[in-house]
Image 1: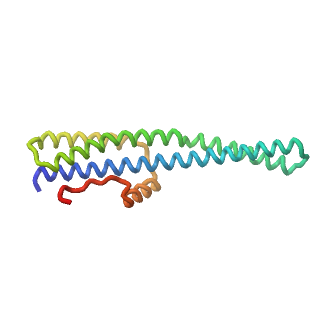
Image 2: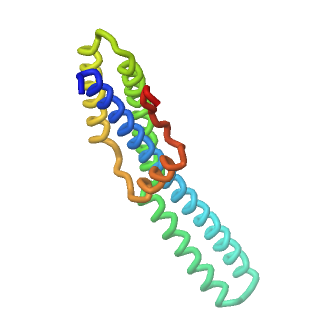
Image 3: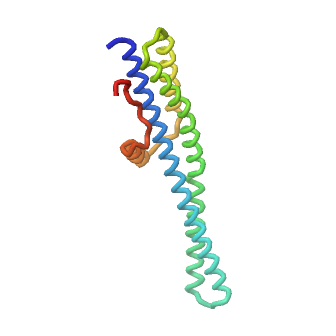
Length: 172
């Protein structure tokens, strides 16, 4: 295998790695957003039920309504505190930022790969650019937020369904 082919394969592998990492971060972002939304809705429903129970307690002298309202108030407070403590909004924001950081790197890797598909005299420059892109990728990976097994599963499904853009070799 000649140097041109080696660089081309490295560029394709880099593009695939960056695309995969980008997709994993995007799916993790979606998971955090879904969890946060579910907990917000649950919190709103619990507050509404608590309010209606307290309101009913003002007009009805029923110990059961008072106890149910107190329990709902406690659960509502717990859900709200738990949601804030888990910091899903902050985590989602960090994943979204990481996702956005990978976009320019993916575009550069794709451009370099396509450039390497056409033989040229600037192989040394291209190889140097590829090295820089791989270093940038490693740096971004070292500072990105962690992902979960569920985000990996979702990324696998996205790849299988054709949601991820995949490079095609110049021979087919």
